[in-house]
Image (cartoon, rainbow, N blue to C red; front, side, top):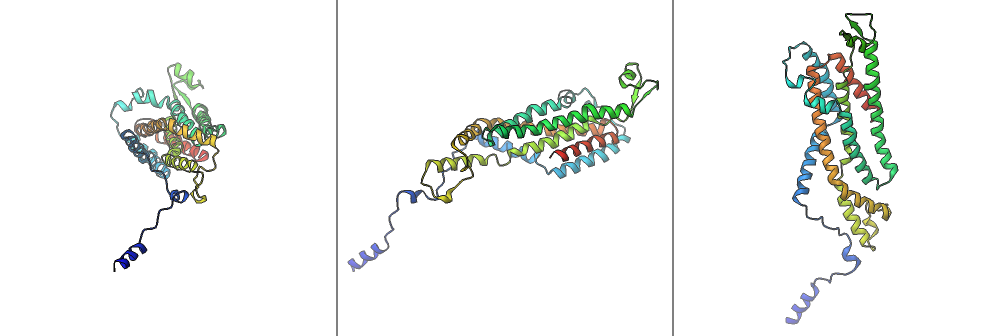
Amino acid sequence: MPSGASASKKSFKRPPVEKGRWASKGTKPLPEQASIQHVLSLIVVHGCRKVLFIQTEVKIALYSIGLFFGSLICDFLPLPKVYMGQKDNIFNVYFVKVAWAWLILVVGAFNLLTSATIGCGRREVIKRHMARLLVATCLWYFWSQWFFGLVEHRTGACLGKAIIKDKYECNEGGYHWHSFDISGHAFLLVYLNLLIVEEAKSIVGWEGIREQIRNEDHKRSEPHQEADSKTVLDVLPEREYTILKLNYDQFTPYIRGLFFIMTCMSILSDVMLTCTIIFFHTMPQKIAGGAIAMFTWFITY
């Protein structure tokens, strides 16, 4: 009996664990422990994404309803004199009037850092991403600095002295130039918001790059990995992979900060658009400005 029990135990003995390449097959490196600062930044980014990435179709529908029905109602309602209804309110002076400069500064920096990272420092990738902002700037200049002024001049008349055919001469003479003044604010605020949403999409999946880098580091440190352990970064040569890691580590905090600022710009744009709908221009003028903004977004994105 003792010898039989001993033989039974031997037959159920756990086989020895193989060492070497088979021991590492299928394993992945564990993620590093996240700091409180990192967790908080992820929470902020997640909240910003919820605010900013509302479906574009929904945004356009809301803008259209607001510009039409909101403007129509406000054109016939007696409106109180409030601070936000004044042209010299702080948000109008320091944000709306220089909004495109803010856009170039913030979105330009965001595009530069994200494209330099995902493009592994390749200039052609950076140029392609920055070119979108250049095209948008040219279109903004065409509409707001030339076309709107042309329409205002061609459709206008000097009230009080019809012989004057120039807006500036009319105003300087103490008269009033009456014309179809397409709302530059409606155009700017709608187009700026739609553009920010499109450009901000570079941050989608951004946190996943960290895990991809971690897996690729593990793979490259194990030269005998099996063929089925390939990663999405396999195709990158060593130089570009090094640039990707360096840029990702250096730029990610700034990219998150810029994304937060872009979200704030989007919210403030909606607030100022609401003020424009309530207090400034007439319904047809605001609809024209908003429609041109949506058309410009459609042909560029």
